[in-house]
Image (cartoon, rainbow over all chains, first blue to last red; front, side, top):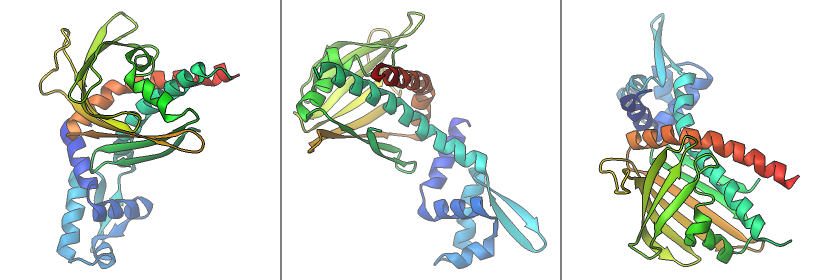
Length: 108
Length: 162
């Protein structure tokens, strides 16, 4: 993932509706119209959210008959989560060392 | 498991990590306030930190470098934004050049630490925030090394507990 892509991914995931859409279509693909029925917003608004997710490569769209099905891109979602996970690991390492230091100072 | 909670918000670029110590807040505070203690946990075992300056007052600055396995040095700086003894501190952390001067246009991490005394000891919450996604990616790319070695340090600590 290059920096521009990372930017698009996180901007896409900054919105609650878009996070919800990703969560749903990772589990099972859904059509744009089925998604639109789930949210209290217009079809066009949901379509716009899907387009943002598609540009970030978090979802892909497939044509099935007359329907446009939205499917989650498991790899892209994992890559985004890995960035924050990696930084969390840095802190977990530091916390372990803090504990070791405090234990050292404890005579018991 | 001493980490009791972590909250990651990709939208706000924040990581919050809550940890519990059996030591009292005064002891945990020393890990931040005393540069000789701070340098023993800030860098991973393979990249130990050395703090050359540590002006632990609001507005004060710290300078440090981490030494890699090949003797290479990675310099960094802190600026203490606020210090409230034993309750918490806020600081900015960034990359420095070989002379220890802050590098312009390089990532800055905003850290906030709060310590709360509990019946069992101390609850410490560390919240870190990045200014931009590119900056976070840059820091994470560098931190991947730390993350790997941090995991090894963890194994050592477990072995030492025997």
